[in-house]
Image (cartoon, each protein chain N blue to C red):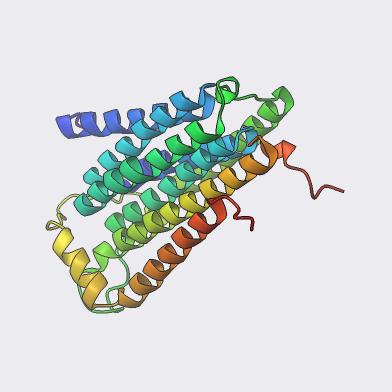
Length: 172
Length: 110
């Protein structure tokens, strides 16, 4: 395998993603894990760029890093006192969870390595145009119009429900 | 870069998310694990739509390469809705119980 600059950057993004995801699940301070999650989300956005999904990479950065992560940090600040910033972990549960996770990873890797249809698929010779215009056309004019409307109603319902659940009780 | 590179990365992310959900004792850390799982799913959608060609006779067009990306966009929307509802429930639980450790919220336990 030739080791060009592209593969170098790809492995850099892969290591960044996996390493920061490891930090998300192993660090003990919850604010540190939130910032590690930010690095993970940026790494996944970089992998989207390698898959030529430019619009999706921008959406990932805007929605995840700009929206969901700020929401998570708000949740941390509003529910954790100074004493609760550290996460308690029980030893038996840690061993059991690690065992289950490693078994699951082995299963997935075995399936990936032995699936003959997925071997030798490379992305040489196929390059996509910039995807934003095509995605807009497909969502707003073609086959994805109905799912788009359904998911927008769902988002509205979820946000109204969230506001309703989290407000203080009005007693009269 | 082949398809299997992306599949290996996404299965590692998925496993780490499962690990976080199983072992963490803080509801917000569990939410972070769920976000890792959703990201690995989206990465799988985009990778498969990039590498695997569907049967040509389904629609007879060449824009099928973007289907997985649109599904991933819907996945991001669902993750946003899920995070909003999750944090609202966490705030309500915190007001009620004064803690967000999942094993201390056991009112329904017999």
